[in-house]
Length: 210
Ligand code: AMP
Image 1 (cartoon, protein in one colour):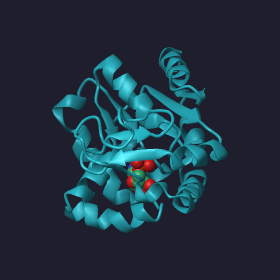
Image 2 (cartoon, rainbow, N blue to C red):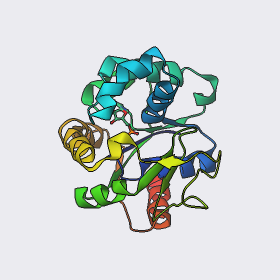
Image 3 (cartoon, protein in one colour):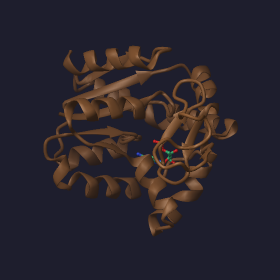
Image 4 (cartoon, helix red, strand yellow):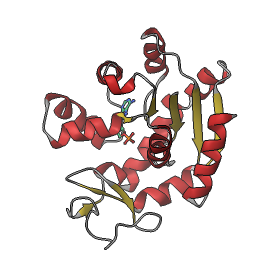
């Protein structure tokens, strides 16, 4: 299955991507994670993307389109994949179409802005391996360090409240039009994000089949 997860930053796409990845044994591909890893490794891509990312802006289309083109050409994508955080603009969606990729389902996870702002303030990440936690919804075992590698957890720079507001503005302006883009294909399913992650997961899995 070739799947796109749409939704505002912080709507829970990453968590749902992990569940589906496990269930369907297809890779979850997050452009945000790829860029953050490039940043940690100080590669050319990381350096190019840093200022956009830190200020809550989108990285230019040509940069992310190349990242995706390269990633989707890998062997592990041949039976399907989950795109988490791509496409984020209409030109990115058009580029995906031009690559000849036929998407089976687009799931849009809807969460109101106020809830997103509250959620993002509690998000913590591991600066070393990139694992993501939340102080209330998904705490690490000791609440301070990463379960996977023991590194201290930190708040992402772009999860600071003023940057979150900018990311939401950018989402409404540039990413939301994708709902209409995919509605027209008949492949869009809307999932209302729930308080409990497990409830959202149940709805998401239902939407995969509907
Ligand atoms: P995310 O973790 O998906 O919220 O992505 C974090 C940041 O990476 C975004 O705020 C953008 O700066 C950048 N980014 C990730 N995916 C894309 C994309 N498809 N297009 C443009 N910028 C992106």
